[in-house]
Length: 361
Length: 213
Image 1 (cartoon, helix red, strand yellow):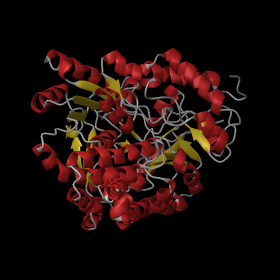
Image 2: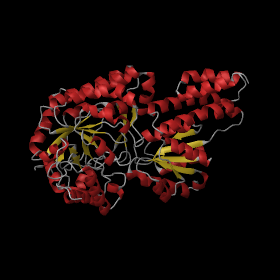
Image 3: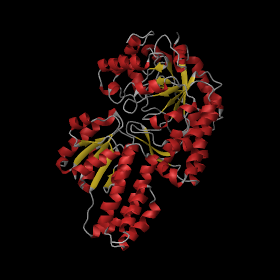
Image 4: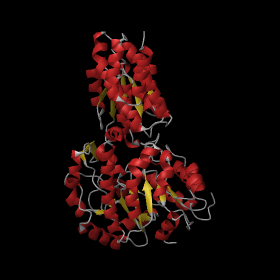
């Protein structure tokens, strides 16, 4: 199988020739360490690692930047329309006061969507989703770099945009103080994403990866009824617009809301964070509904562990979630630049070593 | 004392349900019935937050309910604080808290801060990306009982150890209890870097602090 077919087969819960490997992000510092340069194409990175697809962003001969380069606020519109480095991301900015650390990572100082009056900030911050420039540029990059790989666009359903642009504490208060504001903010972000997706549907992307954190390791940040009231109706606006397979990403323990979440009809669920969810339980209970992606631990194994520990973990995950297909190996979030390089290589080797169907692990 | 039981239950319930607008009248009612501020605090408000914390730990309630309860608790604390200070009651003491240097995540830290305040602690929040020297300066300035550090990334966990070393080098380590928390942390890690405790969530952090007072 070609890499694209391998990924799409697994996303449709089929059994490919080999358990596929894709990542939601590989931070540029790690890309540079793997390649020994910043001057490489997305396909060259995939080929070197034996990975089956790409999305996210690449330095392409420029300076590797820290973080996931997904957030910006002031001045976002122009950089969104005319990206200066190769990217496949289509996420809205946080409507927030931003800061930058010494190492160049951006962070949110505080969300700005905290009152009805603040809704006017949407016009100031959100780019025009129908502006053609970014779609035209990214289409060229897809044509240039795609080859046999599965290429995805990163998007948002609007939930992370709501939570970060309002602030988690203000969100919590507004569930009781101003529920209408939560709904209006979510609706606006979701309608923006849905318009973006209408354009992406016409492009040569193979699938989408929606990044919307809803939870920490203890639980989701809302109960089931709150999820149904404040999130699900607006997420459906985006889900209904998507005409290609898609993966949903949220860190943390999603179990309290997972039955409802899956009604969105996503093809894949990512990243099954080991500290928060049990992949065996998820596979047994939901493996007939959705492809499982992830579960290679980032809290210890990839970042602090040894290559032997990575090998053992990949083997164990493939043995647990691989039988019957519908499993794609990924890290339990993304490959950050603080993963040990030797552990990433160990992951690459272990996937090939243990992931060939019929499985023998 | 007629009516005391009713006020006690009503105030407790108001905090559990996060009804902050009901808190002040109920405190005034309790005071007018001769209930002292310490009794209101110790027998009504803190037990209410214990109920909230337990329910939160068991996923019977979620973040919104926990946060509005903590807000209602803080409303009550603002009313009672001047009275408690006037009587020489110092509360449970101060906590200096921050996400360590390099770590820009604050959701967990903010939840812990709110729950600690709700439990009667005075919280000095140093924010995110907090270098060891800032923790040291805060300990010198505020003389807290506890220093709590948060990290979401394995990348930044090592800064917890650096901060503990900085406290040692400044001669402050024995003056505070150090607690650590965050998704990638474990009890083993806390033990290895010389922290006094690891809190797996906000409720656990409060329980550990209470045990160490």
